[in-house]
Length: 305
Image 1 (cartoon, rainbow, N blue to C red):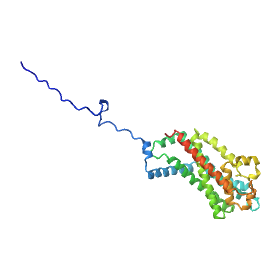
Image 2 (tube, rainbow, N blue to C red):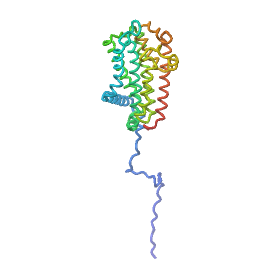
Image 3 (spheres, rainbow, N blue to C red):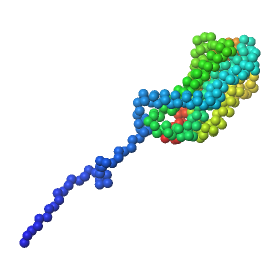
Image 4 (cartoon, rainbow, N blue to C red):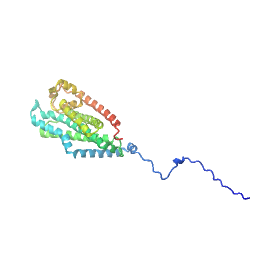
């Protein structure tokens, strides 16, 4: 009788991986999150992206003739129109154009940094530009930083244009002291930052470009009439002056008038004197409130996530 040997397979060591999770050399690598790359990107790369976005914003603003004329050149047009209609003096030694120039600097900041920014951001939100930007390897702060930078450039160019043209064409005196120039610079910086923050809030909360324009345009127009832009506050009803004295536009216009006009003009102001400290505090308070609101709104807006 012949016995056949049966070979028993040698036991194998248990696999460290379940059968369903065995490693596969041909398996595709896990997708890399662009947002993760976004947050770890080097600052230098982020700055390059900000510069590119600023350049795109400025070129887009110039290439849009209607927006460029109506928002950037609007204060200059108003200065010449009112000078032609009211060529005389508003007060002894102060022409109407001299009174209007600092107010038009405030108006230029509002139209550029508040109105234009709100409409632009709402348009980017509506067209999906914010969502497309979110999937690029760009830092999360690039969009806000580019808007702040482009607004600053536009506002400074607008203010410089108004001041130089007013001085050369209409013979308007420039600020005569270092303190006056410092007050003018501080007011411009505070108003640019405040209007930029508020513009971001409005742009982020409006669903469409038309909705943003419908909200911010009448607001900017009304503020010019109740804040001493076109005529002295003494000509307005007391209740109106008191009601709108909590807004930054009224104080920005007065602070800039203090920079340009002789000290005798302060008698025309509601209190009969310049209120420098109060004005700076109110504008700064609006800046803080605007920055906080912009941070909250941006974090809650999921359109770019």
